[in-house]
Length: 236
Ligand SMILES: C[S@@+](CC[C@H](N)C(=O)[O-])C[C@H]1O[C@@H](n2cnc3c(N)ncnc32)[C@H](O)[C@@H]1O
Image (cartoon, rainbow, N blue to C red; front, side):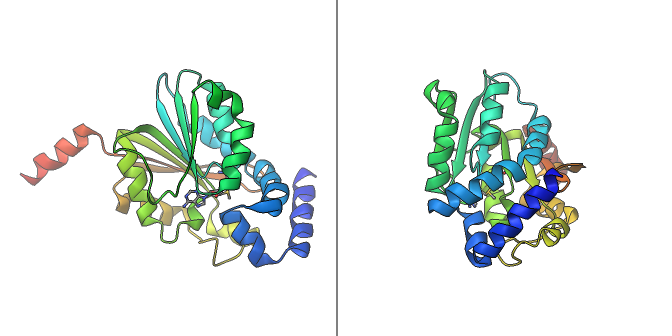
């Protein structure tokens, strides 16, 4: 029932707004459309995927955590609520999303637990080895090509740090009839290979039932000092 209503709203919006405008807005929301159409769609349509990411992260005491492409700020809000001793940073290149998420997470920004930053994920204003964990939901498709963004994630993670990447598979994107050019399509295996090529290790893909489609996440780790040392010793 809820799925039907959601899909009905999506169909209605698609009938009223050109496909090109809608897909550009999905990549970088702005103006009235971004605030009144895209934002509510993100909140409803990505809630299950964000919940799955939250559970896979299992944030520890005093960790430094980054979310890339936070959109309306739902995941950051829940993370701050769930892990009061951890420090969170959000990065998004949409001024509108920065503004909207700032309102939503105001109490955590005021308390100093959260900082939101406007920047792009292929050139992040953070020092090497800044974060224990990086999360990202529903943003991979817009990274064309994805390699510079994955390299940046690897750079800002601490050795042994964890990357949780929530995404819709190419087949799910087809079913949701999203624009083929702006929404790049990947299979689970392709995402795993991209992460491996970027230098991540212990990569696994997890999925579970969700709304409006099943939730899929890649979990990957930056090599730890120990595994780097082992790698060097193998070269000798
Ligand atoms: C489809 S929305 C997803 C929002 C949120 N993660 C969620 O699941 O509801 C994608 C978000 O990523 C942001 N974004 C896309 N590409 C980005 C990039 N290269 N750097 C930073 N933010 C980006 C957009 O501005 C938008 O807020």
